[in-house]
Length: 126
Image (cartoon, rainbow, N blue to C red; front, side, top):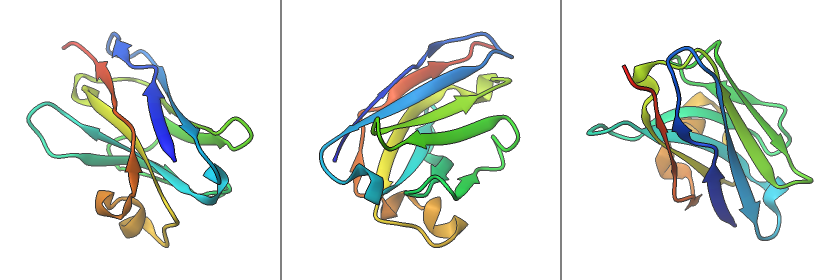
């Protein structure tokens, strides 16, 4: 599976943004998908994950309540909507796939993901 993120940019604090993760290759609907981000000078961190069916979702506490992950398997695309953006949301955002996850711990562990996109930059000036 190959992944390409898009939708990043520079936005004002308080605005909303929708990132897309487009997949190519076979069997995309067999995979769980996660979004991660890497703020400048910091470690990569978990944002959200969705199961292969879209029926199970996890969110990091930092985005809980203002973030929605969704997927359209027919279009082979996963979306990440983030509202009420803050300067601390500034990061490179990556999507990744894995066979499955069993709980929050596995969904949020970047080491369990097999393929990654190149990332898309989101900047929220302070």
